[in-house]
Image (spheres, rainbow, N blue to C red):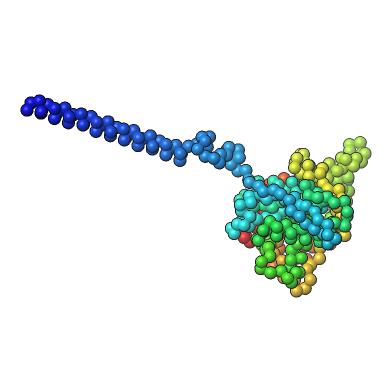
Length: 354
């Protein structure tokens, strides 16, 4: 009996040891699993857990979609336009409609407007090079160019990109194109609810009369000649006068920003500058036209597109709301001179009409 009792006691002790080993093993497994789960959820971006790594410098970078689309002319000719969509996932947003950006010139490529994406957050922005400049086709036949053709190209772009609701922004000549687009839509009796809808428009440093702004250009040059003569009494050279005009009325910065300098240097050569649109004078839509979208006319305090050059817009817009805004200390390129204020003005105005 003593041997039986001793054997029973030994078996009980052995079972107790095995039980404790099993418990320890389970605890170890649980701890290991917990660490694995924690690692999966709390791993820093530098670990290979995530397949969508972004460095701190790229956290604010915008995704883009670039490509080409085809437009045609009444004579049957076809041409390619280059476009760039920033934040394409927001192109159909109902809370913050995209901005369609129209560059100036004519024929100054759109890359100088790209800084808009840095000062207008969240919204999708569509940039494109109008025919005759940038990455778009540059036909040498002058009959392929006109403001009317550019309006038709814009309508094609909106349709092919699937844009349903948008805000229109035009800088310099781009503002003229924006106005003519809205006027065309307002005058078109066949427009229906399925067509792309312009919610609002911003015309930045856009003259309503090209001959008038050219006269203003000459006046400002004469003023610079009178107020900036050399110490020896000699007149300024053309290069010196051009540099003065640039820093006073075009872009008030010590040096022209690289993007702006590059755009001017690579402008198209076939249909370019005010000579291409020298007879343009803005005219109101015909009687019976539908209302144009609410719009804002903005310019810089020292802009060569003076107050006298933008005042006539009041008489040609048939909209209920037309706002004027002057940016203090800026000239023709407020986007570069005071980007934060420029972006806030654009984004807040668009937000009113989203």
